[in-house]
Image (cartoon, rainbow, N blue to C red; front, side, top):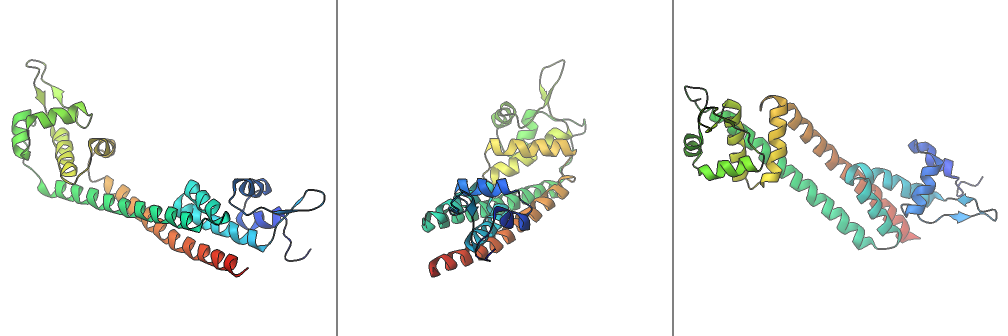
Length: 236
């Protein structure tokens, strides 16, 4: 077989893919259309192998869906559309980095504040609101949104905030000051409660930063593969 003629298995094997995956990628527009033999068999060329390398590099960098859309745009000569998708993905990564930094700062502020607990071990709406400089109605709104879950005094019916509730309120306050919406704060507070406090989240945040770093480096590698692919296409 000529080196310029490749079978589906020749493309699939280096990436641990099935030949059906190669056919699916062609049908999805991830690969350019293949030539056919008189008997209808697909015949691929080095350009298909290169397109596949680009997609395999794009997927961990931008996600499977966006990587697919990028290759579809490139293969229909809509390169500007492909570059826009890449720009949007980079913007999302930047936003994710800023979000992580804000969460880390909120947790640092929370742990460094170390407020003195009330003598009884619990506090009420008014004192807690005054401590944070917010209105009692704000605490009630956060409760309605599911951010905090204070208990009720069985005799008076008043809301009582234990140490874990105070921690959640302080963290919510820090994140609100950072511009976060209530529906963005709720999942973080759920993580804090599930972890048993703020400190166990350190490993989670470290892993989050590691994954963002890996994604950024994957974007660099994918950009090099895509640039080579575009240069080869322009030269033909």
